[in-house]
Length: 279
View 1: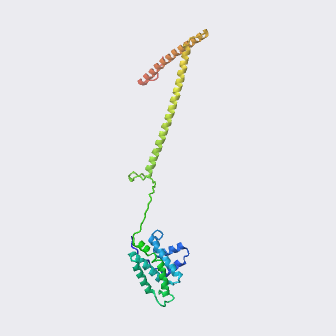
View 2: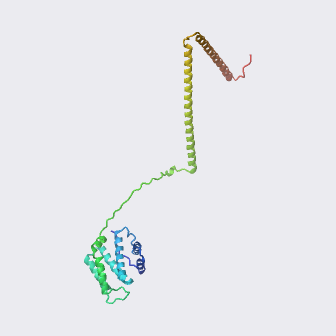
View 3: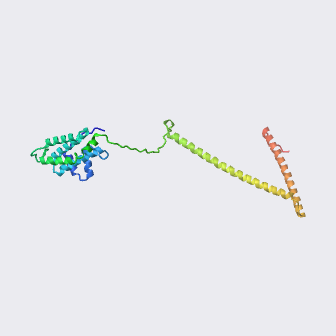
């Protein structure tokens, strides 16, 4: 528990400002600032001290105390409350109050002084009897023992960007060059993929054409090998066989000529000679 000191004395200007503030929350804020209790909204001790002083000020206004008597009343109230922080007993608090009242009592106090008449002392005694002394044990408990403090916390997971280590940092030119290289690599990969798809499509088309040609050739050969049923079919088949044989012979002849021609061209290229002489 932190050390609780006496409340600061209020000036006449601070008391007047408190009385002038009509809004209860605003008046509490004004008085808390004057008493240096910024945490009155969250700390139990500060809230009790603020309420205690508020009741004393309201009593002083209700009975018509002037500024000096109000200040004297607040002094007594502050001393009583401060005594509870040292663990004083009820009897000791009563003795403190009686001593303070004797010091303030005057048979004929002035109209505006810090002294109190016997009737005013009796009224003040009744006020403290129904406020401070009625709740003395509560005040003593609050201001002389540790108060429970409940603390809570919340963990908030925040996603942030991963920061590269300084040794991996790049200049803007290096970053742009790397980005350009990545772009070119992506374009090259896309081209390769497109070329692969085109090659696969061409291969499939070629295979389909070869399959169709093979089927047509098989059908043609089957037709040539089929036994004719009539004389006309026999003649047509003989002609077709003859034409097929001639085509095969021409193909062999052209292949042989191409081979000879290719060999001569190769010999000329190796020998470095010019065009062949005319015979």
